[in-house]
Image 1 (tube, one colour):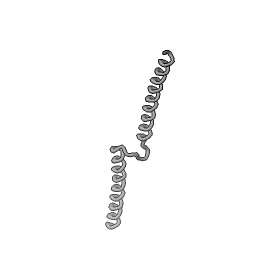
Image 2 (cartoon, rainbow, N blue to C red):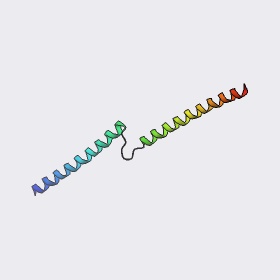
Image 3 (cartoon, rainbow, N blue to C red):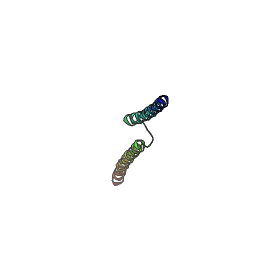
Image 4 (cartoon, rainbow, N blue to C red):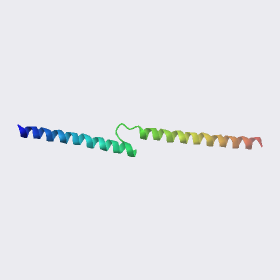
Length: 74
């Protein structure tokens, strides 16, 4: 009986250890910005970069338009 309880306790400790290790790995990924299951960081970052490129393209096209208008008016 004591051996069975000791074995059960040992199994419970191993299970807790495995769950804690999984949580530590997850938190390490989150804290370092690495992609992890369920993370939306990479998608948000990609979207923000795309919006930045779009804004740059709009500014550049506006500059080109003004330059063309000046040439046509001259």
